[in-house]
Length: 223
Figure 1 (cartoon, rainbow, N blue to C red):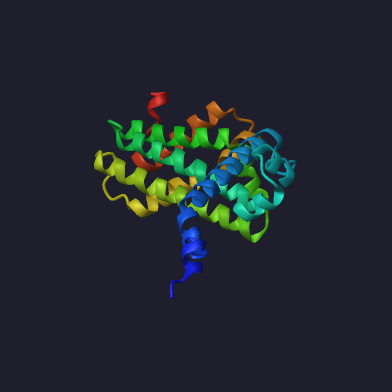
Figure 2 (cartoon, rainbow, N blue to C red):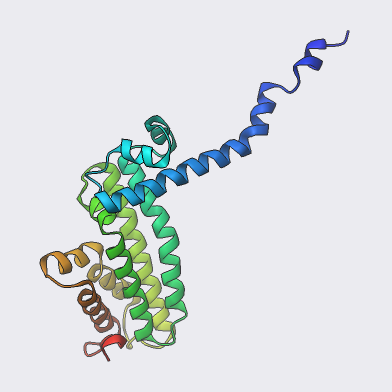
């Protein structure tokens, strides 16, 4: 006997779900992107503490529940924002380092990239540093791991350019550079030290140059 139900009902529910899944994934990605973009703008203009989840949802054109379902709470949204920024900013910086013609130029490219990141994203980075919960500590740890990786790649590049003095331990040098230029050091220089961002950039470039090139070395920008 012919199965009329199979003929008249069309594709199964599972088939319909599979058929629509690429569309749904695209919609989910677009929703997440809108939330992250709205959050980045709100955090930069209002500050992290003064930005309510409802404000982000409104600016993204979604409900609060959709925001939670798509990204998570406010700290998870902050992490998503920082991850997106890191993913677009630091590869560009490391490309500039790799294309440098000399050790001092590589140092200036790396420190300049850090300065741009720290200055432009100050409300976001400060929020991650000041928040005390597990999610925030995870964000900071991830950021510091990326920072150390960047320092390792900088040292390796300078070594390939012949800039490292004989006997320098590359791992120790990279750790020293990462510690000297970590995010909290930039904000200490600006907030407590009273330095402008331009002045802080020169200080950190010279510090890195002395760590990697020798005690009398200075940044190419100061030569």
